[in-house]
Amino acid sequence: MSYKSVQDIMRDFNIPKVKACQIISCFEIGRRLYNKKESDLVKIHSPEDVWKYVSDMYSLKKEYLRGLYLNTKHIIIHDEIISIGTVDQSIAHPRDIYAPALIHSASAVILVHNHPSGDTTPSKSDLDLTKKIINLGNIMSVPLLDHIIITKKTYKSII
Image 1 (cartoon, helix red, strand yellow):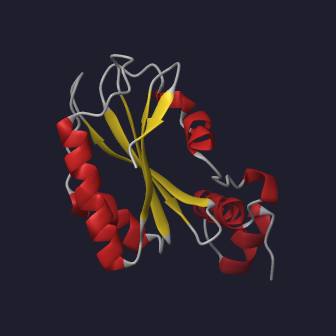
Image 2: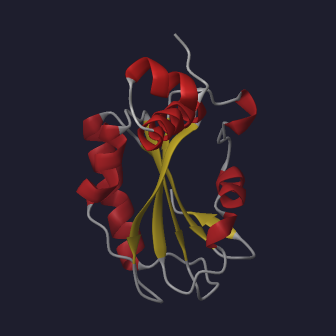
Protein backbone atom coordinates (compact mmCIF):
# COMPACT_ATOMS: atom_id res chain seq x y z
CA MET A 1 0.00 0.00 0.00
CA SER A 2 1.33 3.45 -0.89
CA TYR A 3 0.49 6.38 1.35
CA LYS A 4 0.69 9.93 0.08
CA SER A 5 -1.87 11.56 2.31
CA VAL A 6 -1.40 12.44 5.97
CA GLN A 7 -5.13 11.95 6.52
CA ASP A 8 -5.00 8.38 5.16
CA ILE A 9 -2.22 7.44 7.55
CA MET A 10 -4.00 9.13 10.47
CA ARG A 11 -7.19 7.21 9.69
CA ASP A 12 -5.64 3.79 8.93
CA PHE A 13 -3.30 3.72 11.91
CA ASN A 14 -5.27 5.89 14.32
CA ILE A 15 -2.31 8.16 15.02
CA PRO A 16 -2.05 11.93 15.52
CA LYS A 17 -1.25 14.31 12.69
CA VAL A 18 2.35 14.98 13.79
CA LYS A 19 3.19 11.25 13.74
CA ALA A 20 1.54 10.85 10.35
CA CYS A 21 3.62 13.77 9.00
CA GLN A 22 6.78 12.12 10.33
CA ILE A 23 5.90 8.90 8.51
CA ILE A 24 5.27 10.77 5.23
CA SER A 25 8.65 12.52 5.72
CA CYS A 26 10.40 9.17 6.16
CA PHE A 27 8.82 7.88 2.95
CA GLU A 28 10.07 10.94 1.08
CA ILE A 29 13.60 10.64 2.46
CA GLY A 30 13.69 6.97 1.46
CA ARG A 31 12.41 7.78 -2.02
CA ARG A 32 15.11 10.40 -2.52
CA LEU A 33 17.88 8.14 -1.24
CA TYR A 34 16.98 5.10 -3.29
CA ASN A 35 15.67 6.63 -6.51
CA LYS A 36 18.79 8.41 -7.68
CA LYS A 37 18.77 9.38 -11.32
CA GLU A 38 21.62 8.51 -13.64
CA SER A 39 22.35 12.24 -13.93
CA ASP A 40 22.90 12.48 -10.14
CA LEU A 41 25.75 9.95 -10.23
CA VAL A 42 29.33 11.21 -10.47
CA LYS A 43 31.78 8.99 -12.33
CA ILE A 44 35.48 9.66 -11.91
CA HIS A 45 37.68 9.25 -14.99
CA SER A 46 40.68 11.41 -14.08
CA PRO A 47 42.28 13.63 -11.43
CA GLU A 48 40.73 16.60 -13.22
CA ASP A 49 37.26 15.12 -12.62
CA VAL A 50 38.10 14.96 -8.92
CA TRP A 51 39.39 18.54 -8.93
CA LYS A 52 36.13 19.76 -10.48
CA TYR A 53 34.02 17.65 -8.13
CA VAL A 54 35.67 19.04 -4.98
CA SER A 55 35.53 22.68 -6.07
CA ASP A 56 33.87 23.54 -2.75
CA MET A 57 37.30 23.02 -1.11
CA TYR A 58 39.20 25.62 -3.16
CA SER A 59 38.91 28.50 -0.73
CA LEU A 60 39.17 26.69 2.61
CA LYS A 61 41.61 28.28 5.07
CA LYS A 62 42.65 25.01 6.71
CA GLU A 63 43.70 21.68 5.24
CA TYR A 64 40.81 19.28 4.79
CA LEU A 65 41.30 15.61 3.96
CA ARG A 66 38.39 14.14 2.08
CA GLY A 67 37.69 10.57 1.03
CA LEU A 68 35.82 9.71 -2.13
CA TYR A 69 34.57 6.14 -2.04
CA LEU A 70 33.82 4.49 -5.36
CA ASN A 71 31.99 1.44 -6.63
CA THR A 72 33.39 -0.93 -9.26
CA LYS A 73 32.39 1.48 -12.04
CA HIS A 74 34.22 4.38 -10.35
CA ILE A 75 30.99 6.12 -9.42
CA ILE A 76 31.11 7.99 -6.11
CA ILE A 77 28.98 6.17 -3.57
CA HIS A 78 30.15 8.12 -0.53
CA ASP A 79 31.99 11.38 0.08
CA GLU A 80 33.33 12.17 3.53
CA ILE A 81 35.52 14.77 5.22
CA ILE A 82 37.98 12.63 7.12
CA SER A 83 39.88 15.32 8.99
CA ILE A 84 40.31 19.06 9.35
CA GLY A 85 43.83 20.17 10.07
CA THR A 86 45.68 23.43 10.39
CA VAL A 87 46.76 25.91 7.72
CA ASP A 88 49.60 23.62 6.68
CA GLN A 89 48.91 20.14 8.03
CA SER A 90 46.17 17.53 8.05
CA ILE A 91 46.22 14.62 10.47
CA ALA A 92 44.59 11.30 9.63
CA HIS A 93 44.95 7.68 10.57
CA PRO A 94 44.49 4.87 8.04
CA ARG A 95 41.57 3.43 10.03
CA ASP A 96 39.74 6.77 9.67
CA ILE A 97 40.18 6.54 5.92
CA TYR A 98 39.16 2.90 5.51
CA ALA A 99 36.27 2.71 7.99
CA PRO A 100 33.88 4.46 5.55
CA ALA A 101 35.14 2.21 2.73
CA LEU A 102 34.01 -0.82 4.69
CA ILE A 103 30.73 0.70 5.85
CA HIS A 104 29.75 1.69 2.29
CA SER A 105 31.20 -1.40 0.56
CA ALA A 106 33.50 0.70 -1.58
CA SER A 107 35.65 -0.93 -4.25
CA ALA A 108 38.21 1.88 -4.35
CA VAL A 109 39.22 5.08 -2.56
CA ILE A 110 40.47 8.46 -3.71
CA LEU A 111 41.93 10.87 -1.18
CA VAL A 112 41.83 14.61 -1.76
CA HIS A 113 43.22 17.38 0.35
CA ASN A 114 43.66 21.08 -0.18
CA HIS A 115 46.75 23.22 0.31
CA PRO A 116 45.57 26.70 1.36
CA SER A 117 49.03 28.06 0.47
CA GLY A 118 48.33 27.43 -3.23
CA ASP A 119 51.43 25.22 -3.58
CA THR A 120 50.67 21.66 -4.70
CA THR A 121 54.04 20.27 -3.62
CA PRO A 122 53.39 17.27 -1.35
CA SER A 123 54.88 17.35 2.13
CA LYS A 124 56.77 14.44 3.64
CA SER A 125 53.71 13.60 5.75
CA ASP A 126 51.53 13.65 2.59
CA LEU A 127 53.85 11.14 0.95
CA ASP A 128 54.11 8.98 4.09
CA LEU A 129 50.33 8.82 4.51
CA THR A 130 49.91 7.93 0.84
CA LYS A 131 52.37 5.01 1.16
CA LYS A 132 50.55 3.69 4.25
CA ILE A 133 47.17 3.92 2.54
CA ILE A 134 48.45 2.22 -0.63
CA ASN A 135 49.74 -0.69 1.50
CA LEU A 136 46.54 -0.96 3.52
CA GLY A 137 44.42 -0.75 0.37
CA ASN A 138 46.38 -3.60 -1.19
CA ILE A 139 45.89 -5.74 1.92
CA MET A 140 42.16 -5.00 2.02
CA SER A 141 41.63 -5.28 -1.76
CA VAL A 142 40.18 -1.77 -1.75
CA PRO A 143 42.90 0.13 -3.59
CA LEU A 144 43.79 3.77 -3.21
CA LEU A 145 43.37 4.97 -6.79
CA ASP A 146 44.78 8.41 -6.20
CA HIS A 147 45.71 11.03 -3.64
CA ILE A 148 45.24 14.49 -5.05
CA ILE A 149 46.37 17.83 -3.67
CA ILE A 150 44.17 20.68 -4.83
CA THR A 151 44.32 24.45 -4.89
CA LYS A 152 42.04 26.99 -6.49
CA LYS A 153 44.14 27.11 -9.65
CA THR A 154 45.42 23.57 -10.06
CA TYR A 155 45.82 20.06 -8.70
CA LYS A 156 48.55 17.44 -8.38
CA SER A 157 48.30 13.68 -8.15
CA ILE A 158 50.70 12.17 -5.60
CA ILE A 159 50.41 8.65 -7.01
